[in-house]
Image (cartoon, rainbow, N blue to C red):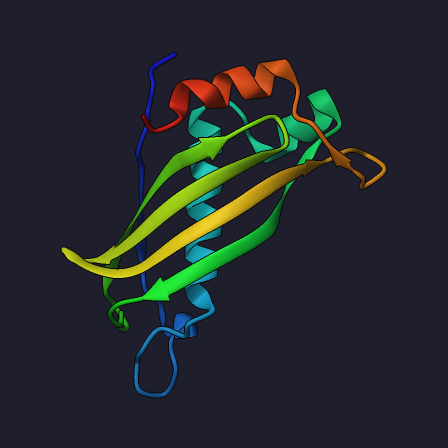
Length: 138
C-alpha cells in the first residue's frame, strides 16, 4: 500500500457554509476537517464503516483545538492538508491545515480515540495501529 503521509482534500465553499456576508461560519471548518480525516482513513483502507464492521470499533473526537488565521468566502476553493502528528494505541492526533488558495485559513489539532461496540473507550487493534503508524509524520 502506498504511504500518503499528508492527505490533501479539496472542497468548495457553498452558500450553506456562509453567513449573510458570504463568510464561512467558524463551525463549518470542523465539517471540512471531519470530511478530510474520513478521506485520509479511507486512503489507508480504514473506512469508518469497515472499522466498525470488522473490528467493532469507532473513532470519535475526544478534543480539538482550532486557530483561525484568515477568512474563507462563498465559492472559495479550500484545501485541507491532513496528517498524523502523534499516535499510540489509545489515540490518534491529527494535524490539519486548511488553505484558501495559498493562504492558511485555519489550523486544527484533533485528538481521536476508539470506542468499542459498548461505547466504552478501547485500544485500537494491532492492524489499525500498524496501518496508521506507517502514516505518522516523522
